[in-house]
Image 1 (spheres, helix red, strand yellow):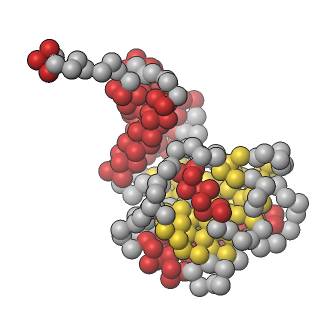
Image 2 (cartoon, rainbow, N blue to C red; image 1 turned 60 degrees about the vertical axis):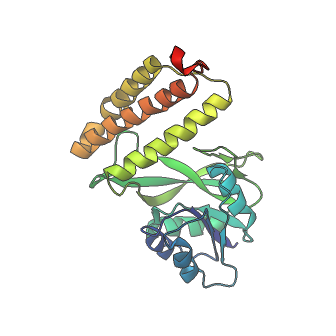
Length: 261
C-alpha cells in the first residue's frame, strides 16, 4: 500500500527541511503552502523529487481544517500521514508505520514528544499526547474547524496506537510561543463568538488557574523542572487570554456619540 506524507505550511523555512528529511522514505510528498514569504516553497520543491510529489500554494486561508482538507484532496496514495513542519518522524515510528500499512484499514495515533524551552516535556499532560495522523485516504479526513481541527472517523474504523515518537519542536523561543498563543486565542474566540457564546474575565481567571493546577500538580509538570513550571504558567496565561478575547469581542457596542463615552 502506498503512503503520502502531507504537510501544510506557512513561513516554516526554519523547520521544513529537517521535517521533510525524515519523510523521504514515503511514496508521495504533498506540501500545501498558505502563502509563505520566507522561502518555504523553494525548500519544499527541493524535496519533491518523486513523480508523485506535489508542492502547491493556496493563500486563501480559511483555517487549519479547510487547509488540511485541501491538502488531502491532492493525495493519490492509499494512506495519508499528516505531519506538521515542526515535527520529525523517528526511525522507530517509521518502522511502526510501515508495519501498519500491511494491515487492515484503521486510524493510527502517534505519540508526540515535545521539545520546549530547553527540555523534552514528558509530563504536564504533554506526553504521550497521542494524535491521529495515519489513516486510509477517503475513509477518514479532517473537519473544517478554524483551529484545533480533528480527524473524523465516519466509518467507525478501529483506532490503534503506533510505536515510536513523533518529535515536536513546538516553539523556537518565548516570543514564538506568545505569537502562536495569541493566534490560537483569536481563532478560538472567533469560533465561540460565531456560535453566540459569551465570555467573562472571571471565567478566564478560573480556567487559567485550573489549567496551571492541572498541568503542574495533577499531571506532574513539576517533574520537568523549570521548563515544566514555565510551560504551566504560560499555558495558564494562554487559557486566560482565550476567554479575555471572547469577552472583549462580545461586549456591548460603544455608543454612537463619542462625546457620550
